[in-house]
Amino acid sequence: MMHFLLDGMLGKLTRWLRMMGYEATYLNNYGDRDLLLIAKRDSLTLLTSDQELYRTAVGRGIESFLVEGRTEAERLAALADRYKLNLRIDTTISRCPVCGALLKETPNSQVESLVPPATFKVYQTFWVCSNPDCHKVYWQGSHWKKIEQTLQAARKIIDNKTGARAGKEQTAEPREGHSTRATGSSSDRELP
Ligand SMILES: [Zn+2]
Image (cartoon, rainbow, N blue to C red; front, side, top):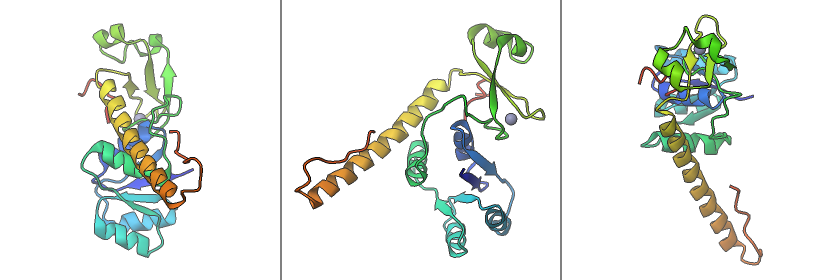
């Protein structure tokens, strides 16, 4: 199973990866030297937006990806394309965006004292972080729609790319009868 290591600039991407169920270690305040050592030692995939760090990692045989893109959707699409990530949130495998531990769907009765009364009244489903030191509670609040939109935008970027690639292949081999197009706020704590 792929395990990512993200540098201090990529806190937001870390939260996205965790929500999608991927293991992502986020080391804020660590220097390049330490990041490289840890990635090598633990065989982690190093994600960085620092070209120099990226080049050094590759030079040392560390699996690394240079995170680029103007928008969150572009960054997610590039990463997902490279590592064949599933750009969907499946809450049965989602991890806590804050600490990375698995989330657990939890009956309403057990969260009543943990969430604001107005929230408790509006939402039916809650998830609690399984890490007892974190124990944060999540629900699909008002930002949920935006999260889905971002993931949808990212999937579309990949679909377009895949379509373009398939088109090229078809042009290169015109005798092939058909192309092989791939199928292709603080109160809302689920926000990355
Ligand atoms: Zn947590």
